[in-house]
Image (cartoon, rainbow, N blue to C red; front, side, top):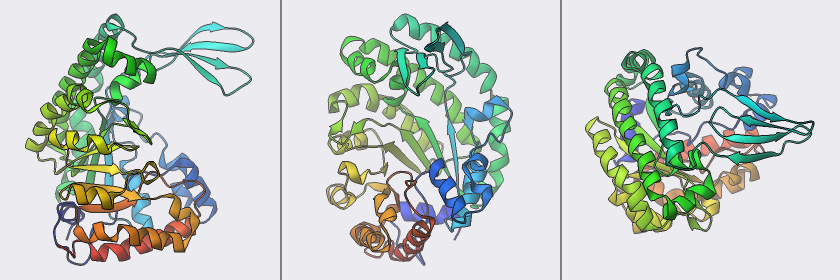
Length: 390
């Protein structure tokens, strides 16, 4: 069975032969990697090597494949199934950095993402002065700039150049593809900042829709071409829209400002052959699960345990919902007994299928490599039970 076949069957509730997929939720934390190198992980996987700029051409930073090979090799070394991680980022952050004001105490800069920030010379403190977008006039100017960047950086020729080299081996099933891009809550927040974004739901709804219409049109144009070359096994729509106390928008706001755009994009991705549509969101988003499902979302990661997300309870309420993650990362740092208990907690969902266990975020730097290696061993043992209750 190829990696692609195994992942597809694991996430789609098959009764597995041998074991289910053994994968990690996210690429690793740089500080964690550097600790593990000191503890015996090969030097080639130090953060300076794993996350170094592997490509000189600018398109690779937006048609994102910078860590596809290096992270896959790292995970293969540790014993995981082979996954390559890709993405697409709309080129909003290509401003020329400029010092706007300087004193003995600070500099005010126009940063590459279009924000103006104050940097203090004798402190790591950074004060945000003005976001990239405050109003419709700002947005229309930025949109005009980005449209030109898209023509040059993300042309059809460059899309083929970046992704075609991966096509053959992916079709053979030698690795699975996870493909990420920012969603319709995340992207306006990046441009406006958290507070102004929240206010805009009430005072500038037309601005949020203008941004998201452009984002949607861009995704339809670019992703259609990318997915004709290399079709993701899992798409991750990045939407950190919740905290420990719940979502930052109401169900009605979600339907209008987020879900409505999913309903236009997700059918296209399914037509292109995308196997699993996931949302990557932190916090407790329980109240929004019905809205996500109605909009076409099939699964979630990382299912933040310390924010109250319990997939055993969620699976009872939504039997066909798929998950990646949901393993309390803090248990790994605590040692073998804690690791074993966490797998026992998750075993009912493992046995039901439709679930690839992984950390509920990146493994913390407080975690010894020995503990993580034990976690991987127990993960492999646990996935022998994948789908047994089907």
